Amino acid sequence: MSEPVQTPLTAQNAAFKPRIFSGIQPSGGLTLGNYLGALKRFVEKQDEGIETIYCLVDMHAITVWQDPAKLRHATREGAAGFIAAGIDPARSVLFNQSQVTAHVELAWIFNCVARMGWMSRMTQFKDKAGKNSENVSLGLFAYPALMAADILAYHATMVPVGEDQKQHLELTRDIAIKFNNDYGVNYFPVVDPLIEGAATRVMSLRDGTKKMSKSDPSDQSRINLTDDADMIASKIRKAKTDSEPLPDSADGLKDRPEARNLVNIYAALANQSVEQVMAEYAGAQFGTFKPALADLAVSKLGPITTEMNRLMKDPAEIDRILGEGADRAEAIARPIVDKVYDITGMIRSRR
Ligand code: AQP
Image (cartoon, helix red, strand yellow):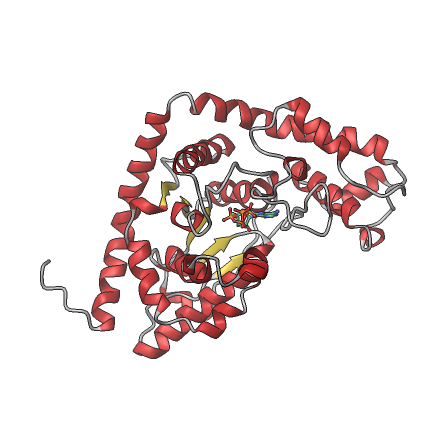
């Protein structure tokens, strides 16, 4: 396990209890990118003893089309992946987003706080919408407001994520600050992003300039947590590289995106620094390095895959765990979101 990183709480957050929230979309199977950039670190945070709340964000997933049966399957498989990777549903709160309505209630309020200009600058929206921005869902545009609601409905102070989510977290901070200023309160914390480790941005195995992603049309571009040992070894063997041997320092990887990606993956899986990996493999050809990486990946991911497969044999038990997690999540979020109705001047006379 890597050394815990102590991120100082933003000054305004002194009034808030340290609490972690993060989520993953069940928009496909979990990838090595999700594992190294998020899940592995979710487990580390849980094991450091901080209060941790983790979510399969199914409402986010439907911002692009999801087949209902596949979404249900991916949500259960995602939950199985969390547990198999080390999330203990007794110590962390684990649930799927749509079971706790506080998320969408707060998201609407935040839609009215966030500005069109802020949303228009989101690079993930631009990447996902591409040239088709007139035809994508309104939900895809408003995605970061729902993400802010996911986090702030729990008054979470820290959010472990991969590098790609940095801009969305800055927007979450902007929403919290604007809400607090508009209503003259110090009600929402200004979250600290936790973007740590050697693999905060795992790249595609086919193109070292593109992020590894569940929705990439090429299955060869990613390692899925459901891939077996042969598949992992074959994908790593075929991963795009250049023809040079590995350099003797991290500096030598600067203009070699594919080589850098494989070294980062190795370092993150082995819980080593990039320098430690370079010290061991300086001068090695990919013919040597790739099999070593494949062995390492299989030894780390194999037990997770086996456990996921075991858990997936009992979907009712997974649903039970998600339901229990949702009850615990609801108990935290409900009073926080109810107070937002009071702050914003909504009459709630039925309660
Ligand atoms: N390639 C990656 N490297 C490091 N971290 C990554 N994450 C995702 N891909 C990488 C981190 O995983 C968490 C959950 O991400 P998500 O599923 O909510 O959405 P995403 O970032 O859009 O992931 P994908 O795989 O690319 O999904 P699709 O294809 O559906 O858009 C986040 O913390 C993210 O940083």
